[in-house]
View 1 (cartoon, rainbow, N blue to C red):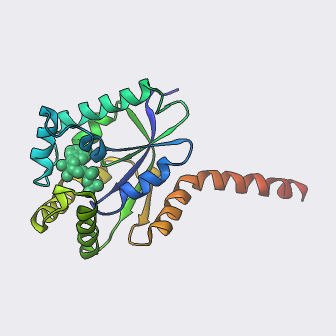
View 2 (tube, rainbow, N blue to C red):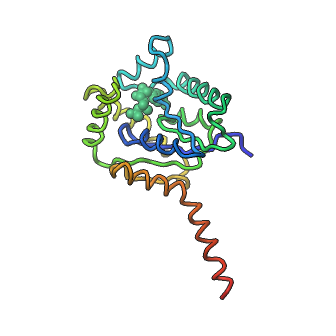
View 3 (cartoon, rainbow, N blue to C red):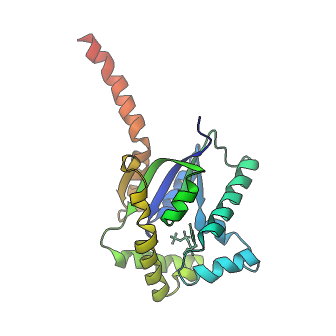
Length: 213
Ligand code: ADP
């Protein structure tokens, strides 16, 4: 058996709702959610590591890859060590990482993609900006506080993050319309995850009738 973490990757632009959906999945037994942004935000912002994070995130830039992957791995190792995340029982739900192809390559040693769920906000930049601003107020997020930073974050997504989609094979990818209500998105995300099980169930139900004929 592979010693890589069985992983659901939630992928999408800032404001597409990865965090909302990730948190929802993480509440279900058998799923463990880790948002890369939360790993960073949990750091003491006065520490050296915290200052590096602020230096980049406040400008809407990505934190450097080596630094990000090292921090992410240390965080996961701690969770495994304390048995909060049990890789033998739980599927890892990742959001916010990988954010570029180099990170995807680096993560390849640690994760095995089971499902790639892409939250799509096609042609609706206005809604994305509205969501980010509303979150900035609620969560005191510096990176979403002004229009220029938001715009830059969306550009970084287009230029650096979007190419990650071409890096992974398409057979495990499911696109979901992220402009629906959170409950409908959740429905589609869960259907995407359960899809195979449902198919198998359908085969089991159909098989006896077929043989009886
Ligand atoms: P969002 O949910 O809006 O996409 P995140 O909470 O994931 O934002 O990330 C906030 C900030 O943290 C990013 O703008 C970036 O500076 C930093 N960050 C988070 N994840 C990564 C990553 N994988 N690589 C580099 N920087 C990251």
